[in-house]
Image (cartoon, rainbow, N blue to C red; front, side, top):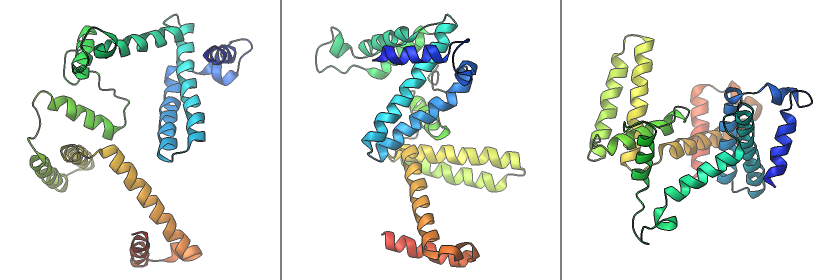
Length: 247
């Protein structure tokens, strides 16, 4: 089955007879689509839509094939190399399943990953946290990595106090650049607090976005054509009504 998709991509990328758009692409131009497709997979899962999930997984698989084809043309690697590499990695990271480690022994996933990073010449605790991750998710991953070295608040109290400190620095900022820098620190601190409380900040913000969108659309539906004519007080009252009915 995968061979058929690989063949389709090879034809699309053929410089003489392929698709002009596909031939023009490179790793950088395709990367945003790869990220977008991953989010669409997550969206289908959140909606529990199995038909959409099947389609979106296919779109995501196409991205893997696309990148692999570009790499093959450059003489770097091909799809079989990608599959072999991930197969090797999964076996290496599960020695209790595929190796000689006895059943029931912790497979030490993070220690194995750290050893892999060291083999690649990356020895720092923060090495390997992808720059292309969403900023909120990357903040959480950086904090978790730092926490493994002992650089972490012992409980949520310190993380909460840090938010107040950063908010004061926002208010004291004298320029737009300073405010941007300090707002970033506030967001980073909120992620840290959420982590200490056991809350997934990315999931929490996603839910907040969905809740806002749902309530705003309900406001528009309730007010109809008069919605934009309402003043802020009228909109706030309508928001309170929508929120009460939702509860």
